[in-house]
Length: 276
View 1 (cartoon, rainbow, N blue to C red):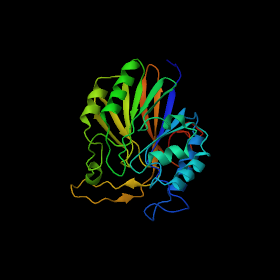
View 2 (cartoon, rainbow, N blue to C red; view 1 turned 90 degrees about the horizontal axis):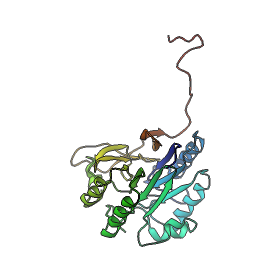
View 3 (cartoon, one colour; view 1 turned 90 degrees about the vertical axis):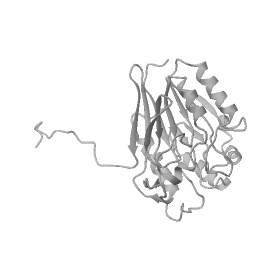
View 4 (cartoon, one colour; view 1 turned 60 degrees about the vertical axis):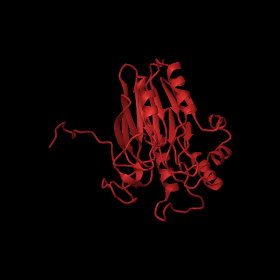
């Protein structure tokens, strides 16, 4: 196992459209992607890898994936892609033939070792449906992969959160039948995080004896409305992403990061070493 820190950047819910179109006639998702790419490129030290946890494009169209591909040429880091409910598996595969992990099997499950951390990605998308699901074969694959490397800190990743968040319209389209996934995660204490997207908000909860984390959207966020009959609305709150940092002997720490350029950093003390 590596003795160096391992840093994984998680971005989510890009919803890229083609030809300059705005998502929901309000959100410039292409510009938002370029902004998060510039923020990631400027990080020091840079992350070891960037993972995109689904909803890469808005309607799964080939021209949207070509727009995404062109934008990602600007990213100076390795990037791995996952499918969400807005994605089309075959169009995604066709647009990224140089990503071999996308090219085998009916679902887009993959695994990767990055430094001292193992990544296991599950494709929870269901064609033409907003909610998510994992079939028996995927769950068996996950259990086997976790059993095969029980000494490696591991991130389990899927687009749809396997828990209720209290935002009613999103809870209706979360992962269905999450108990089987939770039971597998609970059997493997080396799972450091269960990482998700879909909710366009930063959320954390206990799940299967570990911590489940949802990344904020890189453009628009789902409006925070905890009424049982709350409408399906979005809001242009500040976007963000997550950094998952593994330190040998210390464990995993997750940082929520803002996107953009900001004044500073400044020292906490003035030139005389005093705080006024």
